[in-house]
Length: 262
Length: 181
Image 1 (spheres, helix red, strand yellow):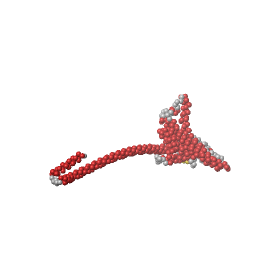
Image 2: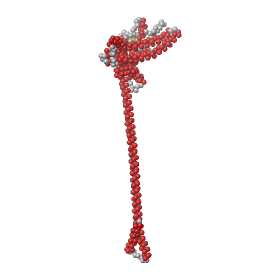
Image 3: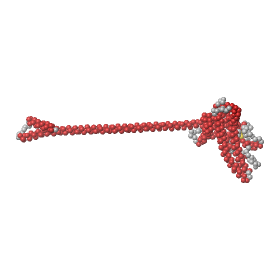
Image 4: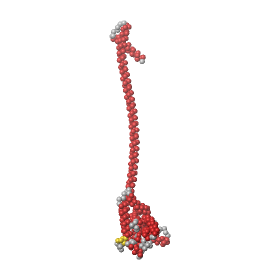
């Protein structure tokens, strides 16, 4: 990432090509692996290891580590799933919601881990796969709960005079069946992309000021470095927040599909 | 980095269009995470939570049972105490009754003894009196005869006639004494 500062003295900021590093294995095949894919593997392994250790021998009276693990799982189980869907449906969709939350969190966090420096979710593939999963899930939930009436109730909301349907139905269709998955995917992707570009900008600028800036202008590096640190902390918040938002919205979509009006 | 420089000089990639490997590995990674949480983590957590609520309920039940046991023990103890008190009272009552009975018996015995001693003494006295009387009778007779002989100047022989006279005299004396009483 640091090599973005050009050797000719002029400062070149990071570009979108940051996110398309060269292939490392299987170049040119559908199984091509580059640095970001490797980071995904690493984070998946760490996540599995952490929760395998944390839930291997659970005790009724938890120790410190188990309390932390339980706190994380309870965030999804109690504060998202059971709060919005109730006990029964919450339990039904809990595995998916838990996997989405911790999957997104694990993919977001390496964006601020020194040495990794890029989020696994900053390539469209991961947000898109999760958005498609959420999309299929809430449609499945609606069709299962209200077979036959789900699509009709979604597209033709009851209590509306029939001429209005000419306007309402296209809007509803667009917002429910097109916008929801797209916004889910893009919100996560763009947060991660923007966060990464911001951090790269701060740290490459620090490097450039130190290396190439004349005289006392080198002092600017202190400011850009401080900004880099602050934004790193901010990115940790964003990583957790985006995981929470993605999971929460998926739950809300499921809840709307299950709700009586639909 | 080299690659990105090469790319940036040529065409740029649209970040919204997914590459096939990106989709493939994203799906693989997510499926691994989903399966892991679904079949490994959450069943463990669920089992632990069930065990925990069972333990909490069990403890509450145990506490309630202990409470009831304690209450029962207290009631039993109180009942036993009351019983013991009643028993002590009755024992005391019986002892008092026994005591008074013994005293009464003793009194009765003492009174009987006293009256027996009294009657014995009386009998003794009576006997003594009788003996004295018999002795006196003899002696008074002799004395009277002696006296009379001296007065008359002749010795009255101790025949049956004189003896009968003495007896009659004494009998008269006796009857007059009784009449005086």
